Length: 191
Image 1 (tube, rainbow, N blue to C red):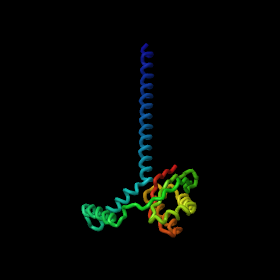
Image 2: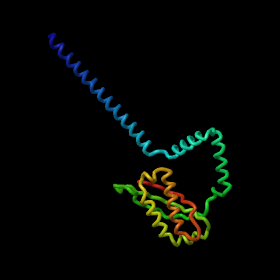
Image 3: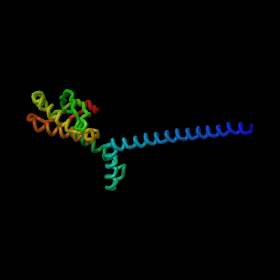
Image 4: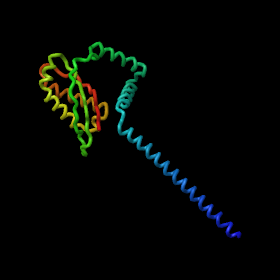
């Protein structure tokens, strides 16, 4: 009888060890998954890059290199904006809306596309008839510019600004009655 009483206890000990090792394995798996998710989030955040934060950090470094204090830099920034406003830089010119553009982005898989609506800011009313007349030419120029970009090139603020500058420069080479001052994206969707 003594032997029979010892056997169930040994089984209970083995079962308890199995439960402990099973729980420990489950905890280890959960910890590893959480670490993978955290590391993945950090990598995505670093890859997407916040160009505004980089530009701000670069401006702070530049200010520090010149020996100016942060207060002096803050005082100078509104003054510079005020000077720009006095020149008429904040007043928008006449607007010329364009239809929606949907293009494939430059990629190896060809599975990314860009849907953009934009409005052109014109310099002078006399430009409006010329823009209307040359609309197919301008659509072609814009489509070629948009489709020549990759997702990486247009996903940052700097990339969008560079795209705008390229389109404006190309459009202005085809205009005679005035020029396009700027482009405003009213819709910008990448899928």
